[in-house]
Image 1 (cartoon, rainbow, N blue to C red):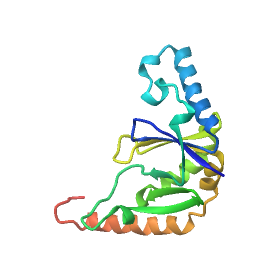
Image 2: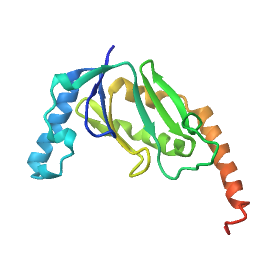
Image 3: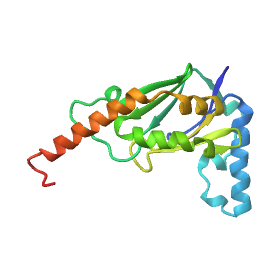
Length: 175
């Protein structure tokens, strides 16, 4: 099974699908919604521009970064230790930081409601460092929903408790 991705000028927009046609249908869907709402001037570039099959590349691996809420940084942290790597399918990886696992669990439950045409909309990070707009195919959405998070949730709980202790014992903070 192939994985495709729309080439966009926006770095934080990732549209993946199993069929090229699903990407074309998604862009057309958003274009039609904007026309009917008479707000085509507010459209993002990826919607404003009519996509062609030549702008859709086959990719080996899809990536989704899920970060929600505050981030705890320290000097020793690097990207590998900041995110937990979830290989949800053989060709799709989701990265979630420890502080976001609770939000990720809620997101997984709401995922069926995020269907747009044949893809699922995943908007992450608000206006944060890892903010992005993503669309993923059905099989990836189902794999995310069924992924066993039990060990990650326990590890996240322990890390959050450790962070609370550090904050509480910090000499420059009066909490």
